[in-house]
Image (cartoon, rainbow, N blue to C red; front, side):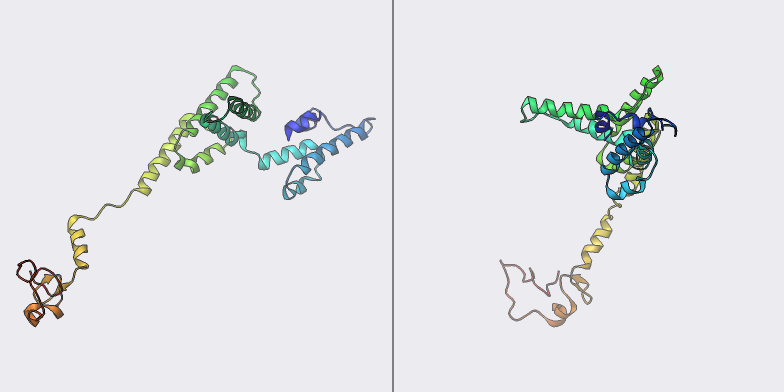
Length: 241
């Protein structure tokens, strides 16, 4: 939206370069008309629920600043992060070189628009570089750290790279503790658990059959046949060991 208004020669109404004319200024009517026009552009570019509460603010600059403070991303950090991520993931692949180049140029231009720094001294360039380092570190951190990443990118001013590292490290340690699998059962516990599912005879104290089918109580079934020359106790309910 800022680019569109600048293209129409009205950016000065947003940045405060045009002040409100005095009551006796002969250009009062013209200035008020231009101000209303820019306000209309801004309001019409918004969702009705967002634009309506700002409809009666006195100047376009007031509307612009109110919406920026309420809805814009602080320091454009999230947009910069998203664009840099796209740039680092970009590959030509099967695309023609013209398509690939134009795609990259578009991302570069969008990235340039996100930087609103006004450098007045060498320290400003250092601050810009440090912010770039922090965003690059966040871009290459794991996807499961998205929550803490979003919290960091939403701060103003942005924390230093050391502060970011410290916070990410704490979150990583917390996740390791919270998501660690419980200790596996010991072998005796596993064996005990397995026995629960086995039939058990409380008379002869042996597994694989119950008291109701125990041969020591009821005798061997008349229709029982030995298998493979065995002793007749190879399988089936009521077998004894």
